[in-house]
Length: 143
Image (cartoon, rainbow, N blue to C red):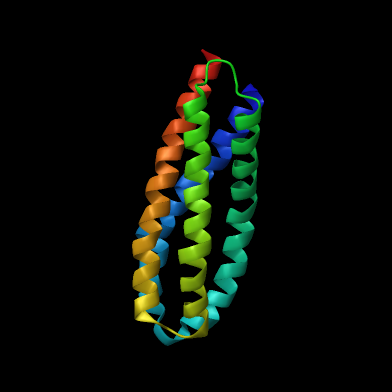
């Protein structure tokens, strides 16, 4: 179970770093690209998916495994909270981020860019909270 918690922590902390980089640097800089944004977006989406897809899948799988096989010392509420935070990240990605990216791929759209930056705060907060939670769960299981 320590390995599962460690893999989960690695995947989650990778996503914490990615989401903060997107929130503070990457998404706000889209505005500077202007009319070239649709072409940029096509390449950006493919490359970003390559970076974030595997850790998001691993993180979701580990959150489910931990619900099924609760590690010793980890409270069940923590496992459920961790799973809920993954769900918040995935739902926000699918319902808010992906549609905003699609609009930006079609044409530069200031409203879509504003929505992307604003709604990314949901993921930023959820992944940051999850990062703290998974580290705490790992400490409990090791301790």
